[in-house]
Length: 273
Image 1 (cartoon, rainbow, N blue to C red):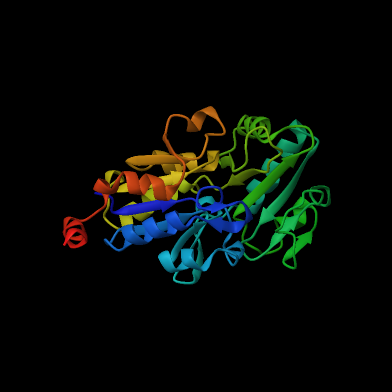
Image 2 (tube, rainbow, N blue to C red):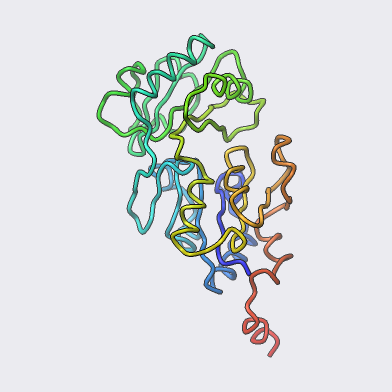
């Protein structure tokens, strides 16, 4: 029986324009009414959750943020796996030697920093809490770094990630776009990934991977999908690594089709009386 649901937000639950399907809300509400835990797991930093539909906040008070580097629970943000500033500086210098056209930005949960060469990216993050500086200042200003973002003028996300991994640093490297798109590639602590977060929460709640289902749609969801007993990709898989998982057109449709995995016998009886 499903006792925990781990669900990505953007592209999985939140569609273009910030739309969440009624069928997704309805089925998630039904599943959580059985006592199943629902945890949202997103690449967004905690400061970028304010525009989520109210219905999602009513379904779950726990959101894993920044791909597992941080978490929001009951309105409180915890940074779980920060990046060391010196590691970021060393990594950035090495990647820039390999790709002189790369530029960097930093996520701080409470702010967003970006190099001047990164500003051409039309990021929604560069609002009132965004500031521009060189990588030395971005990594030594007293703010805790949860992610380093890398974007190249020469390489797409897939190729830039491959180049970054070849450097041999002990970091987590992923991306939430399609591999042929321009990025950004995300660099995090080796202890930060959606998979790390899911396994930690399962341990904390005395659940096993077989008790859980996860829904995602992009490469950064793969560690989460691999950490549970049932893994579902929403929509068409943008790259081969995702094609090994089951697919569905929406979270709600999958839950409705597999209701024997979560529906309690007493609920079935009540509905037929």
